[in-house]
Image 1: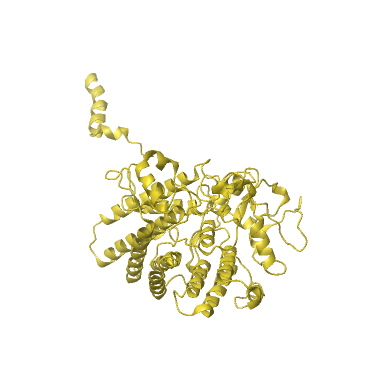
Image 2: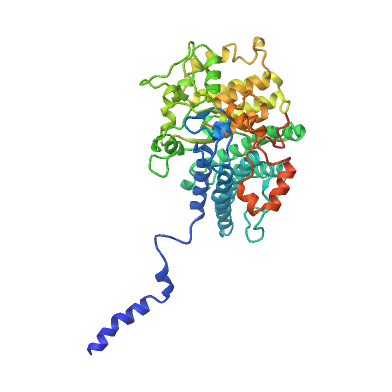
Length: 504
């Protein structure tokens, strides 16, 4: 009998574990996930990449000369290969954003639907994913030029994807975005991702905001295209306007971060927790804002701060002083980035109402929409107002600023072209949105930015401000044939090679 009792525990163990492979499963490391988790992760990875100032991720604020570096100015001198910055940008966008969005899309597409509401929710989710995919591809095009698109992400069928023509990608994205906006407006009474949507919260009300974002992206891309195909650009801008872009700052496309570790704005890690002092405002940007009105642009105290111990030496008639762009700078000698951006919960913005208005002002001047200079002034004023309001500037100060001689759009004494007026004010408004500031500069050729002396001395390619990233080094090595064709098609893999829409 004793032997029988000893066998019972063993028999129990065998039958309670009918599949012995379960013993090899770590419950803390799941092998399956939900579409909601993939979508949230893609949103965060995307915004993180666009708002980070880590020189391992992107150098957009530096290329726009809004910020510069202190001890290690390599990236301000246009060295983007030393830290493999193009590789990181390319990798994050394809692997961490687009791949997760594609997996989420496949999972949602496979879900059964039994009711009209379930159908609508499914359509909304797929449309929102498509909007984010379109945004991501547009950023890749505006960074590199031709990029993998039609063969991207299918590693089984296309392990070495070809590069698509950038303009062809653009027009396809615009078509996709227009269709997405229609779906989201049609299903406006139904939600999409719920709390998993960490940009627009995923409620039924957010469908309208996603549709507005889609239409605003169309306007951005169409204005970019306007020097290449003005007729097509005009058609797209007018259609997107009729469908409805962002209507106020309340519609801004942004992710509000949290104070918990891992969910903080990347700027907090770059500027605070790193305990480094690598970045300061750049003098070209600070000087321009200081010169536009007596006492400086009212956004400056929101953007910058002067240390008190030791205090920087401020030139006469100035309120702040920036570091020499592209050179080594002693941190304590200059004004600093304001504490507003040090907040771990500070939102990361990828599109806002101010940007939209400057795009529409440009569209009016280019006759993409009716109204000419009079309409351009309306949008120009609205862009400045939206930016200042978003940064907490009081309305009386905004009104005074708009009427000042160097700001007033109709002031004939300024002698500025519309490109200079819009380009300068967009530069100011797109502070802390380096990618968009750099894109606005490339399209309008204002403000006038100069390469630093240290960069110029490094060779011919460094004599001007870069207008694109070079392709990732890993593509040269692994996908060499397609890389070589892409480089040839765009006119050479150089930072000075203009994108297809950058005609002037």
